[in-house]
Image (cartoon, rainbow, N blue to C red):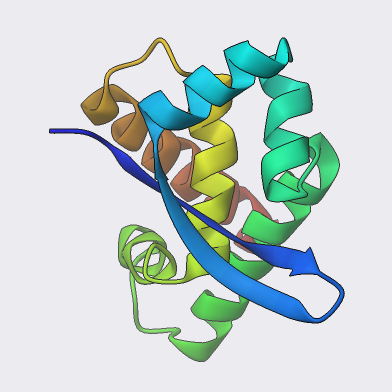
Length: 122
C-alpha cells in the first residue's frame, strides 16, 4: 500500500487547505527539484526544523490539557486526527524516507510520547 501524507498549510494568503500526497510523489518531486529533504519539507509544508517541533509540541500540549484523563499514547493517537499534526508527521517522514511506513509510524509515536512526557513531567 502506498503511504498517504498530509499537508495542511496556507497555500496562498487567502487559502488554507489540506492536501494529500503519496510519499513516492513527494520524493519524486523533491528529486526533480534537486532539493535536500530538509529544504523540500520546508518548501512543501511551510515548516522548518524549529516550527515543526514547536507546532507538534503545541498540538500535543493542547490536546493533553483538553483531555487530562488520556494516557500520553492516547493523546498522540488523538493528535493524529489533526491535519496540522499530520503535517508534522509528513515533515518527519520526508526526513526519514528510508524507513518503512511501519517503522516511521512507530518511531514518530515513540518520539512524540517521549517529548510529551518530558514537557509535562518537568
